Image (cartoon, rainbow, N blue to C red; front, side, top):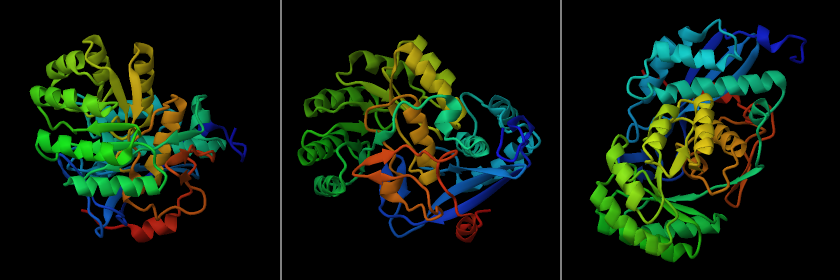
Length: 386
């Protein structure tokens, strides 16, 4: 029962609002597909507020056209014109029904349709439910296996000197694990970058992410050299839909191959499991359309004996909190790539938010996501993207 005496079953979704906000960019960041953030230029995030009979929750979408096809403009119009009308009047607790309505409004196609837009609304509903009941998201699920999550410092640079300086900066801030973006150069140049990171990071946990940049032969050549640098995982070396190549690589790579972009929907993971083509699955809230589907993916990985790792999408604090709740629920105990704090400032929060110190994030304990949003600040930061 809610504090004012109403029951959760009586709360129906009556409003969905979108805000494109310009957040300050702290550092520049690039992947094999292109630039993600540029220092000195604002980074756009789409914040979503879902209301139900006076109770509200917030979610976030991170438009990164260099990583996937959704843009700030498409996320706003998808939510405002398709997803919101499909769920108005529905019970806020009916998360499965909401996801079914999403798929009718924006068809899944081969895998999943408009996952970033769907994720923002789904996360906002989880936040709303937590606020309605006065409990954190993990309590809603009955799963909270960790109180802290170790973060990895992301290294993305053009030269060996540049990445060594980046590692030094992360170490000075207390980070003890590092993820290197590769695929920005030739394989030989990428290898030199990883060697420079290993030299600068000592014995710290280290993994690499190619964001689909290589062919099978190039990836295998690089993997055989990365193992000598004690790299713990090789994330998404091949295009997402190269199932045959990924199965071959899974069989012959001397280091575990982790899948990210290949796993949009839980059904994608089921396919890779049936084909014995996956060793490590990356849990990523926005990529999989929100917390509802991400939980299904994590449970399937656990039941199938597939190791889970965690990652994010350069989220601000709302997305960071959502990921922390998911990873804590499923007991992910290796360092995760939740790099939003490294690159952007979440200047829309007030009071309670995610605590990060020495490269370790506290899983929030407040209601819902555990992030207090200053709506006045959100409205002030809002920009017109249409």
